[in-house]
Length: 357
Image (cartoon, rainbow, N blue to C red; front, side, top):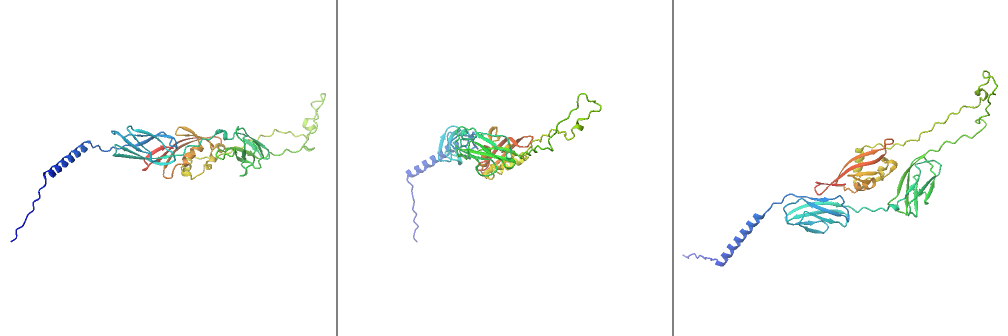
């Protein structure tokens, strides 16, 4: 029978030593890594200051602790590395940016912010300064004056037609119909900053009757001094055609009432205006004389309704808008003359953060 042959392999001593050394080094590395391992704790990113606009410096802070180095990514191809829990950055264009923060190369947090266009600076010298009466009368010319210093051209519209009604600095106009009229004037062709005012036009006053023989009083005959007072005729007997005229009763000036809107309904109108769905002109009927520059106290800071409405219209469709509104009205005609608003917007990837409007 044929015998089976066995082959014996023998490892070289150097190979064995090398394998043992690798195992020992790997074990030491695992022990060191396990000893120095720290689990990631939750931390947040927050912005300091409400001015999230193009060109403005935005300060970012975090509540991360026990770190050595923070890596910031601002979402606009700009990065920064800090050893403190805050950093500052400015953005060159509007839009949504996702801020990424990595602590010690292993713990990561995100926050999405919206950067808005820088506000346009309006030159007050390019806004008309109009001198005009509060009321007018049908068929009676009214003088409107502009006292601005830098105006060289004018476009007057007096509220009865859509056309330009005058091109002079001091312009006369005669109304043909009564009621509230909206005055607007644009100087130097600057359509961005028109001046808007209101005027109330009363009906034409009734014409006086001409003086005729029928309504002209005759001479008054007075009794002589030596007439007997017992037999002297009475004045109404001597002048039977002279009626006693009473003083005309003054007609009270009509009070125009504005729509009485509740704060909850006004809030709903504002929320439905987010994203530019409703024009600002829909609110003019609630303000005294249609003044769209009525004072608004937004989160403790004074602004105008026009600037406040621009912020509401800039809120994106997916963001939740929270408004708490207090309306201050004129007790005589219900027009709104001041608004107090606390406005917040919920943003972020998961809708977990709030920012001031």
